[in-house]
Each structure stands twice: as structure tokens, then as C-alpha cells.
Length: 456
Image (cartoon, rainbow, N blue to C red; front, top):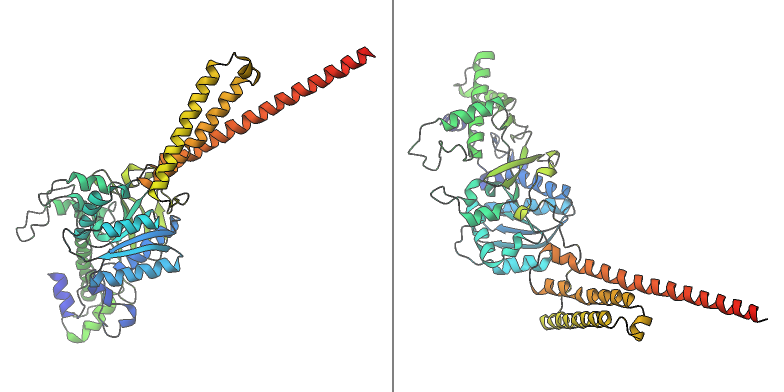
């Protein structure tokens, strides 16, 4: 209430993130001369998100977002930021915000066809839950195979996997493991925040705000609450300086401009970090936490400023989607060949038949190794070469299966291993056989020469 009173009395608009903050930009400062933003601009957060993606060396992404009006400005800012950083958006799909039981099958199909492995979602918490539901039902492979989801702001709350009774929805809980995103920072290690946190959880339950659960110490303190608290302190600091130090009466109308100038020069350590604003009334410095869903908590793995400076990042602490510890690539390590389904099935069938024939020949060669024909041809070399041939024919199968089904990353590289083994065995046995044959030829020549000399 104090913030509302001061804001109304001194013509300082109340600012929230979303559409309201999107229209209060620096070029409109004449239209809104009393503007002050106590919450970092979401557009700035999306600019920081683009920088974070760039610094992870992910240059190709898929973008999924909601098409509500406030989000339009945010997404537009993000797209412009990606262009300036040479990040290619391979596919961009939107759906209506707040829609329930919609199908995102086409959206997911396009993402899979784009070959992008980094998927960015921008939308509300409710929309994030709708994305998770669709993904689990229609495209569960999008959290496997090296895919990585990146989110921002509204998605980075434990509430994304909690139901209305504050219980954990297991499917959503498993889905978000490894999700990475940006969120407004909170100075959780500062004395101010620790005191504030203790007071927050000791506050009696307020029936007028049933969405806040002060006794649940595992529940996140809403980010908006941090900034609202600091906003009140900011107004109080300015009033204190005005009254106690400058001896100015803040109730007089002619002193309102003085109050605003004092307010813009206030700087103190609050629960959301250093609280101060720049000449445009924007929160400065604006820093954002890089968060990672790990088990039943959001782990801070780094920080990044709105201008893209990565102030800290602990890469060893990151868990990627589905518990993967290996940093995913933005594209598959090699393109997936697009061949018709029946041709791929024929290739798999032919490879299996050739492999079976190779195995049969190996058994036959081993069984008849003492017969003159096989003995003279060195059965060991023949068996090794046949193993190589079998591996080579079998190496076609993983690549073909990759086109038919969603396979693991192990299968995706299995064909390379099989091909390397097969070529090594085939070329190796041929070289050894040639060397052995050459040695026999040299020995035979020496014998003939020696025999000829003895005869003379």
C-alpha cells in the first residue's frame, strides 16, 4: 500500500512486467516523465537469454512461444537479439496463450524436422504446463536424444510441476529435470535476504492471499515479492533522505520533482541485490540468475547481465535434460539422411541377411580350417575379414533406424564404430596377407637363386 500511495501521489506509475513494462521505453520518456521501473525489464532479460545461448556456442535453435499481445513485444526483442548474435532460428512456431487441451503435434513435428536440438520457450507458467503435457503425449523424444529446453521467467518456478494441492505431478517433475532458464536475481546469500526470508516464512497466513504459502519453506518466495519489498524500501530511503537530510517537506506539491530526482539517485543493498535505477528509470545494474531444475529445487548455476556479461557460470554443476551431463549440440553431429521408409527397411533387411551370410562363412571357414583349400588360404585372415564384412553390412542398420524411429545417442554413433572396426579388419588383414605373400615370394626367389648358383 505504501508503494501504491507514493507512486500515485508523486505520479510514478506502478510498473509490472509484461505489456505494461513493454511500452515504457527510453524513447517514450517524454510521454512518461515520472516513470520508474522497480523490476528489471523482461525485454532486457530476453536479450540476456540470447547472449547466454550465444555464449554456450549454440547457434541454431527452435523457438516456441505464445501469441498473446504482451509476449509479442518480448519475442520480437528476443528475435532481434538472436539476429545480432548470428543465432539462426531454424523454426518458429506460436500458439494461443491460455489455450487448454490444444494439440501441438504440428509444432513438434516441425521442430524435429528442423534438426534443432536447442528449444526455447517463451510464455506463461500455464502455457509451459500445456507444452509439457503435449510433449509427453505427442513427442516424448524431445527431451531425449540430446535435446535441450531453455525457458525464461514464468517457467522457472517449482509451480510448473506442482498441482493445485501443492503436490508434485510426477510426469511434469520428470520432464523439467535439466531445464535451464533465466530468472530475476535474488541476493540469497546476503544478510538482507536471509532476514527477509525468515520474516517471510514466519508471517501469519493471510486469507486474502491464499496463493502464498508462508509456512512452506521449500516453496520459492515470489520474485515479484522481492522487488515489491525493495520498491517500498527505495521509496522509504528517498523520503528519509528528503526529510532527515535535505529538510524538504515531501507533502508539498512543488517538491515532487525533487523527490523523483532523489529517488533516481538512491542506491542500497536489498533482497534483490543492489537497488538503483538509471536516468531512464530502469533498474540498474540488471542481473539475472541462470537456473537449472535439479531434483526438487532450482539450482543457481550462474549469472548474466542484461548486456550479456556472464558474471559467473559453473558448467560442471549443470544437469541437462533427462539427467544428461554432456553438453548437447545445437545440431546433430551429422545430418540425418532422408530416405523413404521402404528403402530403409530394405537396407536393414539386406544388411541383416549379409551379416548372417558372413557369420555362416565364418563358421564354415573355422570348421573346415584343416582342409587344403582353407588351410592354404590362411583361415585366420579369412575369418577376420569376414568379421569386418559383417560389421560393415551391419553398420547400415543404426543409420536406417535413426530415420525410422527416435533412437538414443549411442545408436546414432554406433554405425561409425562398426564402420571403423570393419575397415580396420578388412584393410588390416589385406595388408598382413600382402606382407606375408611378399615375404613368401622373396623366400622363394632366394631359394631359386641359391639353387641355381649351387647347380652351376
